[in-house]
Image 1 (tube, rainbow, N blue to C red):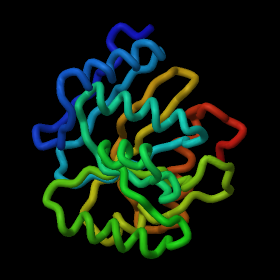
Image 2 (cartoon, one colour):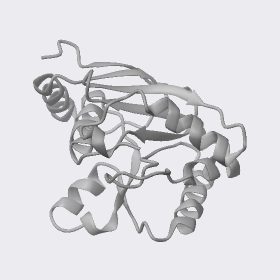
Image 3 (cartoon, rainbow, N blue to C red):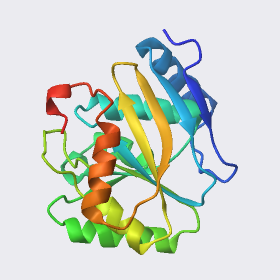
Amino acid sequence: MADNPINVSLPSNAPMMGVGWLKTLGRFGMRMLGWRLTGEVPNQSRVLFVVAPHTSNWDWIIGMLALLGVGFKITYMVKHSLFFWPLGRIIRATGGEPVVRSDAGGVVDQLVQQFESHEVLYYGLAPEGTRSKVDRWKTGFLRVAQRTEVALVLVSFDYSEKEIHIGPVYQPVGEIDQDIQAVMHYFSRFKGRNPHLQS
């Protein structure tokens, strides 16, 4: 059981959520599961968190406990088919927004519009796009970065260490193929809950 499950630095303008008992619940859940949250959120007003590896629904549960434990709120994408009652209300209350995966170009445009219309926005997505094994990750987050002044922050879920780590900030070189390979290479060192599904 992790004694101190939350060790993360947040900027003063970071969007926060929840009340005291929710923070207590999140930290208790992290301790019970033996997980910890570490790292640093950059002092940027608009951040796109790139989260991987994503191989299980447990990622959402553990990730939500971590966010509740620190009181940090991000907006994140969830496939639209999960927005049924009562799960849909829970997802929305914690920052989830529905997305239709088949409309990839529309998702990029939606994200660009979101970042351009908000002075402060913290958004999270999984570039694998699915919990199934894929040969190539979706590159929408890189195209969003090309069109906006958003900071790309890599967030790893490592089941071998039971640790979610925020950072580093990734600086794209501007070549989609080169950038996606570099990001995939970084995340390849971390073990998902179902490693046989990792790319």
